[in-house]
Length: 196
Image (tube, rainbow, N blue to C red; front, top):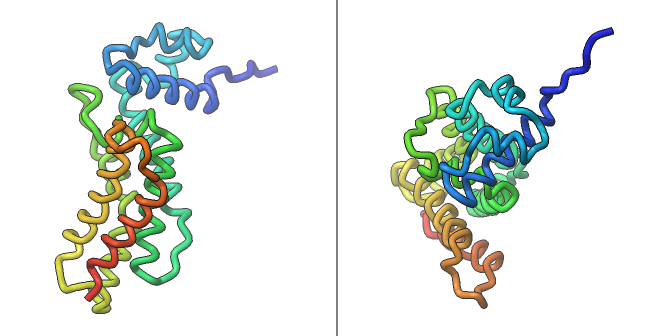
């Protein structure tokens, strides 16, 4: 009878989530493989078996963050109306960040000194923004948006979404601020501002 696999996908995801939580809460120095294994109730052997070591674990965190983010972006129901679709993608951006705040910092900041994603991870991260880029390119080509380089519009839309989420995460918004309502209004106003 074959021995059951103890180092499975469920354990891998538990380790990734906990590693992200440790880094987000206390910085990269808090990521000890021994502490990580103890927190999850496994051995350091399991961590090494699944990831190889700390650099590979951080790389896997980065990839997992973009895998989840990309899945949420791909699941957005698009309408064919650029302003509405950009707003929907922006809302999905915030939902993804709120669902995985422990991965967000690893994806979009230099929270782990010395970490550089490999080419495959970079390709994955860029691919998650493809729905945004596709909407903008089509809107510019069809004359719905102003005749500006699509990259300028796409980065501007991303910047509004990312900036507002970052302000929210860092506690830089007034306590009485209705984040969800203001966030959607800002996304919609930004996208409408690109109309021809």
